[in-house]
Image (cartoon, rainbow, N blue to C red; front, side, top):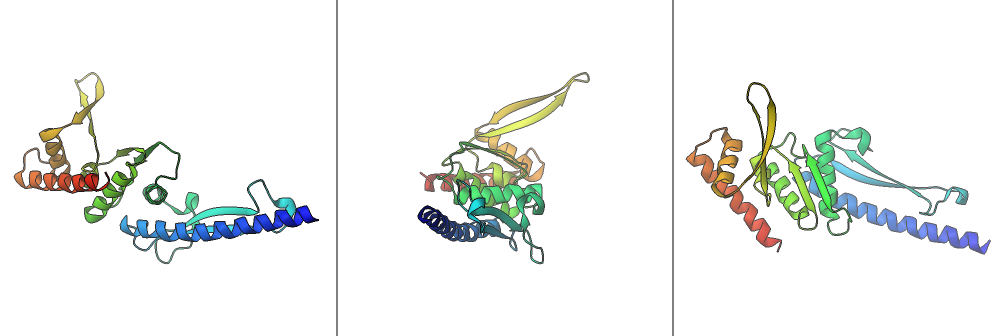
Length: 214
């Protein structure tokens, strides 16, 4: 009887800690999502405790579920059912930024994390990816110059054909070549003074973020 009481007490204490941590995590991640072009979204961490001690596990009495409301008027649904690919990538990014330093994962790969966004929101995505890269390796597939400018290394993947064979090549954009690639991403033009000025401005913003993180 005493052992059962001790187990129930420990499980109850753990449930309380989880509920408190879940609420704090949801608030912080929701704030990150608002900055990542999901202004009406909200994250919820739902902790449901089992009543019977026979249903307890080595991890306690709880079932923990992360739910997302992607926009106002929508219901909270499990991430696997309530988020598009781009939204799921942004939720993952927001979670990892909030948990930076506490997660043992050493490499992250983001594809379409910038889907459906641009302008200031894209800059914020780039900024947060840069912050995440302080504690892990981050690989990002992007078509947005606002995101690419924050990379420590900018790799360009291109496709070519000689009439018989189609092949892909990978090159690292450095110096003026990187500026030219950002100009191409910005305007589709190979040569543009206005585009070059904008590209250099993006790189300067990214460098400030890099210096701030040292």
